[in-house]
Length: 419
Ligand code: GLU
Image 1 (tube, rainbow, N blue to C red):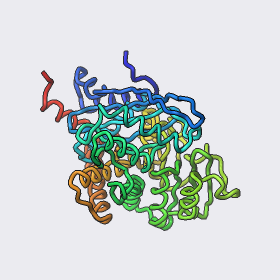
Image 2: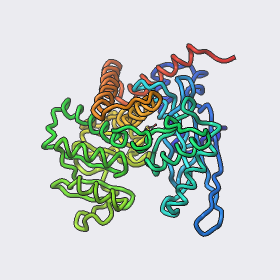
Image 3: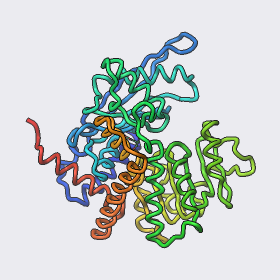
Image 4: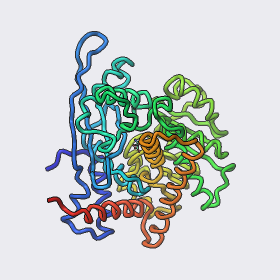
């Protein structure tokens, strides 16, 4: 029995079993690698605009504390539950280990429908959530960041709430803050830029010419929009994008800068163009060179995997591909080059790490330096993953996860069991 139930947690557990089998990890060690160290559930009461009180459930899961503080985003969404948050925390652990950050993984969430609360209520909820988390977080304990449904403003409220409690400004308590409040240049774009940078590397490896290539993006939030912008800048035609309101398609290539401006002011892609409207359920199977799922978990199941027509699958979202789909991808022809989520979207937490380092040192870098160092860490992890996949004849995902699990396991075993 465990409190972590549900399809997303089971998916993360299944992935770890595949990797543990590959690494021959003894059975009695596996639970220690899988089970989160701490989970916190809080209720967040706020006063609504009409004077009534509403209570929202919030979570934070800290997966393991072996490598240093825990790190990970906070998600505001109506479907969040503790199992999903735990799975996302496990993936954060793997992501941080793979690229070499001194963190364990964490994730948080509040179950809330953002379309049903006002901006003032959002501020009250953000502050109350952070206030409830104060006993469990700290710059050297657990450092939050944005995820689905949260942004720079929410991070500024988190930072302010923690700072008011401490009686001094503690910028290093969260990352993904506005640059004006101790954030770093290049964090907002970091995840999408990383996705596009790695996709470009794979394109040159497969001899795909960017100026003749096409991309399709599912999700136009922080990750999808900046991935689209960067791929567009590299010369690819972004022929389709979707978000929670619908999808747009234009075989001549969408005007991504205009769409970014539109989504920036309107909050979604809705209303951009009537004649480009497209069935969002068809987006993943549209023929293209680079497919970027940048929305939610488990969108590519076994059936979708059979029907994919892309050449490169660049996973911007966390957990977009199920283990059943992985089996299909490992055997299908023509082959699809998979950039697994824990590598492909790790640019976000990499630059979060740079933000934390800069805040601790009170020494800020130029954007050029942020980007150079981001790509350096991504390239290094990419090369290690490829070498491992080739040497052991395994998928990129198993290779990436194996590198990450080995790192955490070695550190855990060297420290030993206390007491
Ligand atoms: N939420 C992001 C992720 O899933 C970023 C986490 C962070 O920057 O700490 O990777």
